[in-house]
Length: 533
Image 1 (tube, rainbow, N blue to C red):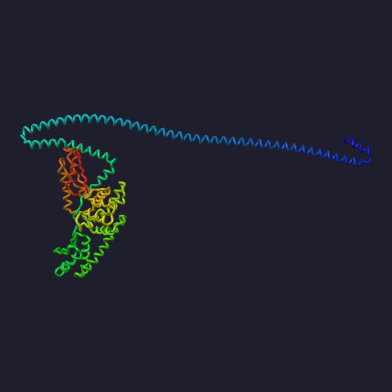
Image 2: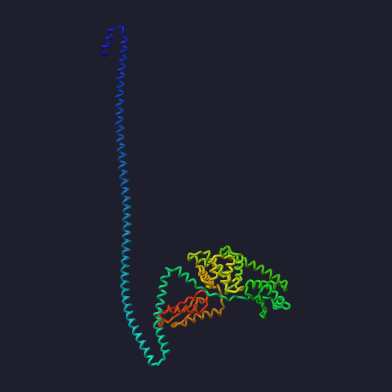
């Protein structure tokens, strides 16, 4: 039903007129509300659409801005990457150019070296051709000389009317002179071949070389002097009917020599410990002034005890110095006694310590046991502590003594008994101790000898050198450890110089006694002198 019809119906019905108008108002209000709501909704929808369009437009603007910004950043990053790549490429190109420059320079050097080698080769070829020509010419001249020698030999035999013996001697001299040059060349060739093969046989050659050792020295200092304040003290030392001097000799075992020498008394004894007891006892008795048999026995006994304590202390200190243990007390005592013994002025105990360390060094260089070598070197001369008390040389005495008192190592026993080649060497340590013994004995200042013997040895060296043919001068230098020999360059060739050095060294080794080794240096030179005016 539409609204006008509804109003008409309400007008026709009078009783319900007011209700109808009320309902109509409500309906109209509802319709008006609905229309208003629809209008408001349309407006809001339009506003929402406008807002959406605005947002979309803003988003499009922002997106475009971001896109432009990203494009700019991408272009900037691309430019940075391009610049970095160009720098790296330029660095690589520079390095390649530098390498190319170095290679070019090296090629130039190689070219120059190659040219230099070619020049040297050509010069060597020329020199070889020249030497070949000279060799051929020398061969021809040698043939001519041999022919002349034969002709002269025949003429001498006919003209001189020589006896067969004289002719034989003359012929032998000519043959010797002829063969000397060939022998010199052979000697030089053998020496050069030995030197070339030395590295391959290093251990063998080293061990053979170190077996050359100094000869044993047997002369010992057996006397010492005791100073006295006055000659009256000599009478008091002798005593009534010689009882004091007999008491001293009996208590010490040393010989007391009282002679006319002013101011001194001589003490003579082969046992260095007893000699030390006698000397120190005499010094104390002289200082004390009381000289009678009872006092002499008391003083000597006290001094003997002190000396024995010193002996044991010296032996222990030496064993600690070489860092060795396990010695029998008798061995320590024997080593301590050697502190009172000297050989050509060299203290035997200090010599034993030196030999111990030298043996260790040599053994370790050869890959052997350094501690065992040190023990061999330390005990090698122990026989000298008692060789004056029993028969035999000190190597055998020392070996028997060491075996008796607990030394079980065969290498040590063989080194003690064989360090002077008295018995064959059964281990490598024996020749090592030989070498160390020679080094310790031959070092400057280790041993002393008389001036007369020293001068005699230098003269012998020079005389042996001067006896060789072609030698002009000879000088013994470095305290007789080297002899310098000057030879005539016109008479002696380079090859013959080697032969002269060999002959001198052989004669020195065979005819002389010396510690260590003696170097023979033969000098051959040609001097050209001219004066400018």
